[in-house]
Amino acid sequence: MILAIVETIVESIAKALNTFGVDLGGDHKVHLERPARAEHGDFSSNVCLVFAKKLGMAPRLLAERLAEMIQADPFEDFLRAEVAGPGFLNFYLADSYLHKITLQVLTEGEDNYARHTFGNGQKVQLEFVSANPTGPLHVGNGWLGSYGDALARLFERTGHDVSREYYVNDTGNQIRMLGESLLARREGRDIPEEGYRGDYVGEIADKYDGPNDVMTAGKFAATVILDDIKVTLERIGIHYDSWYSQASIEESGKVAEMIDRMKTSDLVYEHEGATWLAATKLGDNRDRVLIKANGDITYLAGDLAYHQNKFLERKFDKVIDIFGADHHGQVASLKAGVKALGIAPDCLEVLLGQLVSIAGRKMSKRAGTYVKLDDLVDELGPDATRILSLLSSIDQATTLDLDLVTAQSAENPVFYIQYAYARISSIQAMAREQNLPMALAEANATSASTLPLADVNLALLSHPRELQLVKTISLLPEVVEQATRERAPHKVTTWVRTLAADFHGFYHDCRVLGDDVSADLTDARYCLVEATRISLRIALGLLGVTAPERM
RNA sequence: GCCCCCGUAGCUCAGUUGGAUAGAGCGACUGCCUUCUAAGCAGCAGGUCGCAGGUUCGAGUCCUGCCGGGGGCGCCA
Image 1 (tube, chains in turn green, purple):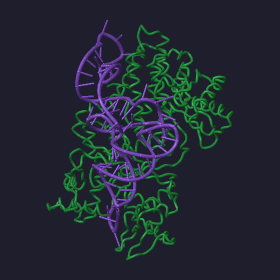
Image 2: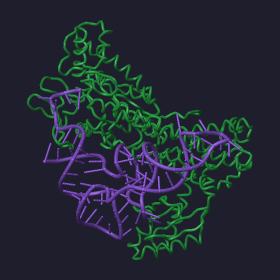
Image 3: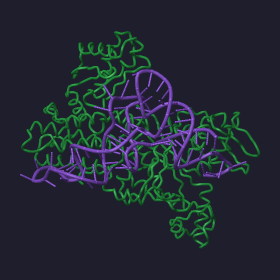
């Protein structure tokens, strides 16, 4: 319905423009926007500025003509159209359009409001975190973890078939180093230069009673660490569909198979005893080694076999890899390799998150000087941790000041938002106690559509606070779509903060229950409260944050 | 040297893919609780949007060049 009003306005503009011989079928779409200021109306269009030149007319003149035509043939809820500024066409609508949106939210409910189908069931895999199992997760992993999970939730809500995967780097050098560190710890020797020095190594060494074999010890440690990683991720609400082992693909023979197949093209060649991918021909800035001169395969070769598995065996339509910016260097070669495998480059999307650092110190896994995600969650709790990481774009490098974050933990934005939810719950609990018809109907309703909504006069919602609240609620579908398309879950955070602010304002100025509020107004406001609750739950659900009924 | 990201209020960040008078939170100051939770509301203060050009009706947003910060350019993973 919110889309309906947009479409209606666009159509009426298109119809009017048509009489000037402008056809809007092509590249130019009428772009409607919500003016920042209320005096500029409910919706605004810049079409006249765009088409004025083409038509050889002054923008304002064109706008005036259009306004006249639309006034003469008004649509539902239309009040007036005005020309403003250099040639904007501003639309003013009756409040009734907001009342309809309130009704829509209640009818569609948490399951259906702000849900989209544009994903068309497309199989999408998101791979994120994938930290080496050589130590506990650090806060940077948590950042991209929240991001990846929230993005996955957005994809789910927009009609995609989503799978979350963690690629486990359980082989190669770092596992060897981990094994050596473990054995050194067990035998009281010094930890090697490139080894891991965190306390956890000692703890695992105490549990290890296996042979003095480096890889055996390394794999033992990796397994223990990975189990802890899983626990940490679950703590902040991240659950994976699959954990894919790097060792498994390297041991499967698939890598050699893949390289053999690639050799039939002219994209693979031998040079100085190594096997190379001619990545330069595929957009990379240098060629890359697949098989080293000593016969070992490179990380890239394994990664390509892994991606081949994603696309060709598991048939994902789209694969989104989420890496930290420190892996930027491998993107071009990965893309080149995927191209070499005959996979359409657009199917692979690599998103880079700028790094998280801690004020005043360098984080290093080998040195054991990084801040553990678990410690941050201990300090702030899961909800505050997630919101903190979903506040800004992943293009923004974050420097965490732990002292500041801890000191301000009570002022974390998440409480402001959750407090709105708690207030709503409180109103609803009170309403049930007072045997209010709406509250009781809702409590007993199997579906929202059985609510006695027909009896409620939503037109009573006319207070600026009420209207502002509905306006914000009405934006949620667009926010969800945009956040998904732009891979920007932080837009949901920005929106939900606005919603909470609007609700607190409403709560302050508009009582829902009480003797000085008429029964009809109580009903109408109760509906608005419920619509807010639904919207809040949707947004918090997308962010992976809980909605507490009491605080 | 080349590639990616960032530079917006004292601090942390938004900014509707180019729109009208650039917004929040924190911090400072001032008001508001006998009524659904004051973890709230309202007011006030705070800006050459890093700098310089360009594109056009219009630029925080797009292009170019500088300056500053972060990351990357392995037969490591």
